[in-house]
Structures are given as structure tokens and as C-alpha cells.
Amino acid sequence: MIEVENLHKAFDGEEVLKGIDFTFDKSKTNLIIGESGSGKSVLLKCMLGLFTPEKGVIKYDGKPYTEFTEDEKKDLSKQIGMVFQGGALFDSMTVEENVMFPLRMFTKKKKKENLERVREVLKRVNLDGSEKKMPSEISGGMQKRVSIARAIVNRPKYLFCDEPNSGLDPKTATVIDNLIQEITHEYNITTIIITHDMNSVLEIGEKIAFLKDGVLAWKGDKSQIFKTDDETVTDFVYSSNLFQKVREAQQQGL
Amino acid sequence: MNYLHSIGEYFLMLKGTFHRMTKGSVLRGLILKELDDLIIGSMGIVAFLSFFIGAVVALQTALNLNNPLIPKTLIAYAARQSIILEFAPTFISIIMAGKVGSYITSSIGSMNVTEQIDALEVMGINSLNYLIFPKIIAMLFYPFVIAISMFLGVFGAYAAAVFGGFVPPDQFVQGLQEDFIPFHLVYAFIKTFLFAFILATVPAYHGYYMKGGALEVGEASTTSFVWTSVVIIITNYAVTQLLLS
Image (cartoon, rainbow over all chains, first blue to last red; front, side, top):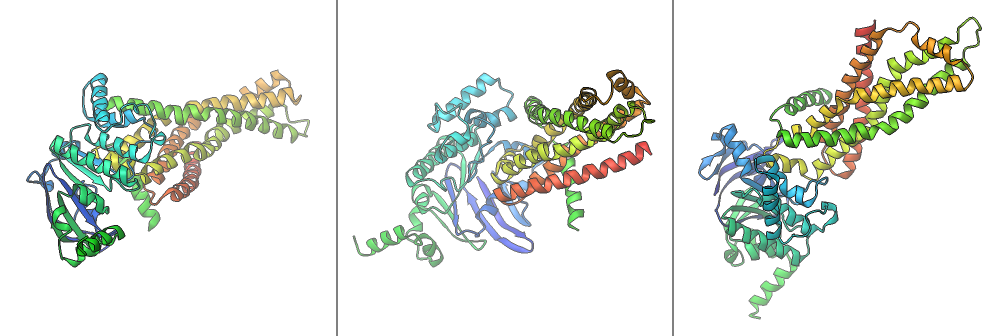
């Protein structure tokens, strides 16, 4: 579980996060949604420790990050898995080497044991057989799956995903969404996903934070978001023509 | 102010590079890879340039020696001095700023724009140490490249002067040995070590702190070449003033 309390972050005097309060639950897919520039990525990077907030507290399993010792911070980073928007796979390494990378860096196990774990994880994300390929030789969807495999190979407690299905076709995007949700339940981890995609919200939005202009404008889950009358939320949710048409059809009783 | 900021940032980067070391077994692999990319990969161009620069220096000296009172041994003497003191360490380092420097800037810059550096940081790895330290260690072998460059430069001079019929072989060898000051080699290798450090770190700085996309990676490579050359030239002047004057 990650709790964010009264989080403020500014760049060059301009406040990007204006007092965010939210709890990201364990064993759930927690979604952060909102328009571009609403502060989603900044919030994520604050939680990852890449940005230092001006004010506020981030608690990992009840303990504020500011109270972590250097060793605890190091341990925490080993418990975090991250799926980047573009995959962020290391170009010079094969799929297998990319997935094995966190194991090589942080475990003292023998190569054979690491390889077994890598094979297991690659199988879990349906990528067995692609071990020796380079990132440039596989599709965008496969790269995302390698990125997920790399993020979970060290059995993390927290999984962060920055728009994991951006640039993918709807079918592959759904596969990725479902894979992340299954892994979240299976490994009992706290998953935080940034997305613009309303299909993802519909599929895996077990807990949702809606940000607007750096403020938490709404929170709830996928069953509530399509029923709310809050205009800031409905403007965003029904900005897609498809969802607009579905809404019109529902209103007409079709 | 911007320059001061960059200089400060560069030294902070150096401080970060020698902090929180990467796991030894991983580092070993990275150093070997950098040795292959930065040192072995540069040997071909260095050999080619050194041979022909040496040959041209000998040719120019020979062609401008019209006074019969000046001994022919001067051709070898002039070639040796210019190759050991300047052409091998400084000129080759400027060429390396283009080859090795651009490679370092663009490889780190590409990792930057594709969030690979963020990925390292999120995993709790000191990206500065992981990316830059192996390059610095690999570049410690740069003096070997320069030693080979010196040898091939002198060999090129010999080939041009002797086979071109400008000086007999024994006189060329005699010229090579004339007034030889061993400290000149020490001076050349001291500055080569400094240039090696500059070649590893200045381009790394430009790649690591660049912002933007693919276009900016190209711009960063160009800027990196210019600044690496400028720093090498200034360092060359300072070291020469300190050690030889």
C-alpha cells in the first residue's frame, strides 16, 4: 500500500501538484487518469523518488519515505518494478539479458538459477522463444511484455506502469491490461498505472484517481466512473467518440 | 552564468560517478565492452592517420630542406619531435573527440531520451557510475593507442623519407636518436592520460544532461565534439607550459 498525503510539487515556481491525497491499495490495479499536463507523471515520479516533493508525505506500507535510511531506500528500490511508456529496454541487451538485469544486479544467485527465473517470467508474459532476440527485433507489444517481465522478475511489492498500452493496437492493449491485472492479483502487489485510455479504465480500473490541473478531482472505481455526474470527469470520460456514442445509446435505451 | 552552471554540473557528475559503485561482476563486463568499443574499435583509424601524418611530416620537412649545410638527419629529428610531442597525443585526441566522443554522447543521449537512464535509477542503480565509470577505466588504456600512434607515425616518416629517396636509412635512424630527451615521452604520456579522462567524461556529460529527442542527441554530439576539442587544446597549452617551459 502506498499513501500520498498533501503532496505538492512545483517546477520553476509553477505548482504542478497541488496537495494530492490518495491511497493506492495492495493487490489492486490503481489507475491515475487525467488529461495531458494534469500532473500524473509528476505524481508517479515523486512516488518513485525521481522527483523530491516540496511538501507532503509519501508512505510505503505506513512508513514515510523521508524516514527511510539510505539502506532502506536501497531496499525499497529493489522492491519496485517499473514499466516505462516506451518500454525503456536496454538496446544493447537481448530480451533474456534485459529481464535478467535486475537479478544480476541485486541477487547473488548463480546464473543457472537466474536463467530459470527469467524463463519462468518470460513464459508468464507469453514470450517464451524470444529470449535471444534484441529489443529492435520484436514488436511494440512484445517490448511492453518484456518490460513487464523485467519489472516483475525480482518479485516486487510495488509495480508502476507509465501508460503501458500507449501506441498499441486495441487488442494488444487489452492483452497488456489483463496481464498487468493478473500479475497484480497473482503476486499480491500494489500496482499503479498511469493511463489516458478509457478502455483500460473499463477493463482494470479497480481504484481510480482522476487528476485535473494538479488536483485530485475525483476518486472511485470503474463501476462508479461511468455513472458519476461530476462534469469534470464526464468531460474526460466521454471525450472519446466511442464512449460518447455508447452513452447516447444507453440514454436512448438501446 | 550558464558556463559556470555547466562546469559545476560537470564536477558534480564526476563526484556521482565515483559513488555507489556498481556490482563488480557487472562492472567487469561493462569495462570489457567499453575497451572493445572505445580502444580496440579506434585502432584502425588511429593506425591509418598516424602512418600518413608521419609520412607527410617527413615529406614536408624534406621538401623544405634546401640548404646543403643542414644535415639530412633533421628530417627524422623533426618528424620524431612533432609526432611524439604533438601529433600523436594531441592531434589524435582531437580526432578521437570526434570518433569516441560522439559515440559516448550519442549512446548515453539515446539512453536518456528512451528513459533507459530513468530505468536504471528506478532500479536503485547509480546510472552515473554504471554508464561513465567503465568508460573512464577503459580509457586508461588510451596511452597504448597513442604509443602505437607514435610508432606508426615514425614508421610512416621513415617510409616516406627513405623510400622517397630523401635520406639514407642510417641517417634517418641517426636523426631519430639525436638529442633525444626521455622526459618528452613522459610529458606526452602525462597529457595523454589527461586527454583520456577528458575524452571519457566531457562527452558523457553532454549525453547525460541533454534534454529533448533524437534531434537533440545529434546536437549534443556536435556540441560535445566542440567542447571536448576546446578542453583538450586548453589542457594541452596548460600542461606544456607547466612541464616544458
